[in-house]
Image 1 (cartoon, one colour):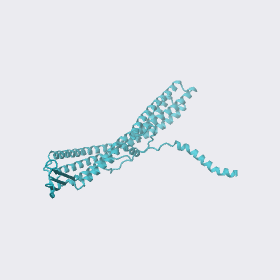
Image 2: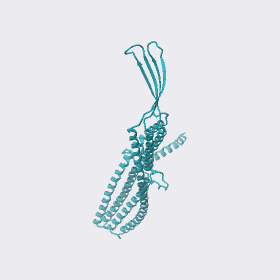
Image 3: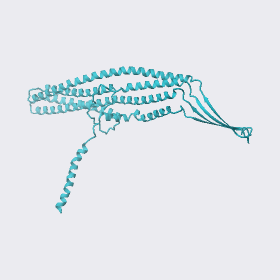
Image 4: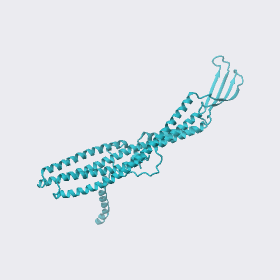
Length: 414
C-alpha cells in the first residue's frame, strides 16, 4: 500500500516541480515590446480629435438627414382665439387654426445635400490629417528614444571595456610590467567612459519621458520598443492626407457657394388656415378654409455676406491646395534623397566598425604581449567605440529616413 501511495504521488510531485521551475521564468517575463503601429493607436485614442470624432460624425449625419427632408424647416402650427368676453360680452368669437409649411427654393434641396456630403467627406479628411500630424510627432519621439538607447548601450559597452582594461593595467602595474602613469591613464579613460555613460543614460531617460507623455504611460510602466523599422513605401502611394483635407475643404466651400447662390431669399411658406366664427351668443358658427402662400421678396445683405464668405473660403482652399501640393512634392523628393544618403552612410559605417573591431583585436593582443604601449591601446579603443557609436547612429538614421519618407508621402505607421 505504501508503494502504491508513493506511485500515485510521484506524478503530482513532478508537476509541482515543473511548475516551480517555470514560475521564475514566468515572473521574469516582462511586457511584450511595443510596436510603432500599436503606439500610434494608443496615442491616437488619447487625442481630442479622436474622442470628438463620433459626435462630429453624428452631427454630419443629422445634417445630411435634414438636407434630405421634404421641407427645409419643420412645419409650424398656428392657433388664435378672438372674443368679446372682456368688452361687449355678446358671445362673439373667432377660432383660427393653421399649418405653415416652409418650402424649398429652386435647387436648394439638391445643393444642401451636396454640401452635407462634402462636409462629411471633409470631416473624414480632417481626421486623417490629424492622424498624419500625430504620426509625425510620434515618429520623432520614437526614433529619438531608439537612438538615445542605442547610444546608451554603446556608452555602457565602452565603459565596461574601459573598466576591464583598467583592471588589466592595474594588475600588470602591480606585477611591475607597467608604470603607475599607465594605470592613471587607464583609470582616467574609465572615468571618462563612465561619465559619458551617465550622460547617455540621462538623455535616454529624457527621450523616454517624452514618449511616455505622448502614449499616456505611467512612470512605473515599462516601455520596451520593438526594433522593427517601417517598410519602405512603394511608388504608388495613396493621396496625401494634407492634400486630401484641403481638396475636401475646397469642395465643401464650392458646395457652400452654390447653396448660397440658390438661397437668394428666405424660404417661402405654404399656409393652410381653418376659421370658425360666431357673431353673437346663440348664432350658428360659420367656418372657412383658406390656402395661402408667403413669398419673401429678397435676401438682402445676409445672402450677399454668405455668398462672399463661401467664395473666400473656396479661393483660400484652392490656393492653399496648389501651394501645399508643390511643398509636398518637394519634401518627398528631399526625403528620397535623404534615404539614399542614409543607406550609403550605413554601408560606410558598417565597414568602419568592422575594421575598428579587427584593429582593436590586433592591438589588444599586441598590448598583452607588451608590443604596444598604453596610449596607443587607449586610442584604438576610443576609435573602436566611436566607430560602433557611428554605426548605431547610422542604423537609426536609416530607419528615421524611411519614416520621414513615409511621412512625406502621407503614410501612417505600419
